[in-house]
Length: 345
Image (cartoon, one colour):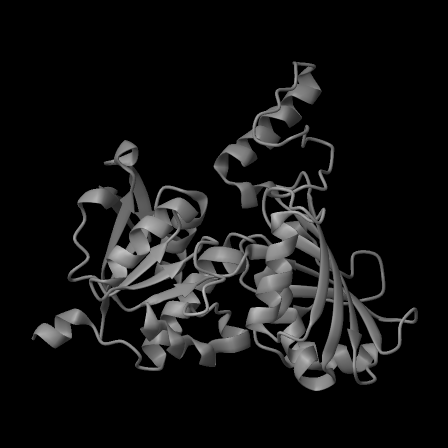
């Protein structure tokens, strides 16, 4: 069986990555359609060895489309996802628009694939925030074994999480430093080149940013509502891949060796943990890869049953595009949807 797939936001960083991953993984697609706004009409995007010309979302009829991978921002998703779903096309949305809706499952396939059956309520499935996705992949096997009480996480997030303009700004500012040109600040509140910014998304009344709030709420929804989590999210001058320093307090005793053994066997995890110079993963190695890399696993003696570790993952892949494609694969593998073309035959 093969499925007709539409990618909305196909000209963006994540949209292009979605197309690449669909091809890489041999997704059973009878046809893939690239959609974007009217200003991108006719823009060419790659799909394996093929080149697709983008069509306009506003004019597209989803009647015969089975799956829509949506990566066009929250406002577009809020307007279009219900319309697309009403045509019987399952929307897998990468924005924050539907993550906190009780009738929309928030899915990371390695963590809570069983919750996907809830998609039938609205025909919409949400992708988590990129920083949450890699975190819960690492936490899930540890939670199953030792029961997490509290998580403290500090993120080191790449500029690609803020889109192509943010990547361009890092490049332009870095070049300006070396040629002593004036440094222009547009996308970020402060200069990002050779700097770090402890501010991602808007500030909330309690002093946390929206990005930090997302991690708290999404971890509870995906993993366990009883888990307490506090986050500090920081933008760093790295183009692709997010890193996280994680401290976890468990209900049950845990050793670093036990955690290491469990994570080595866990889906989506790759442990690189040698206690020597270079014996750990960095954003550079994670870029272009599917795994969540876990390093620096050690016991935290400042709390009872404490553990600390470092994790790194490509935010455009596992944090967004790959996770969305994996969700689509779960729908198919569990026979939760049938191609419309087959129904019509």
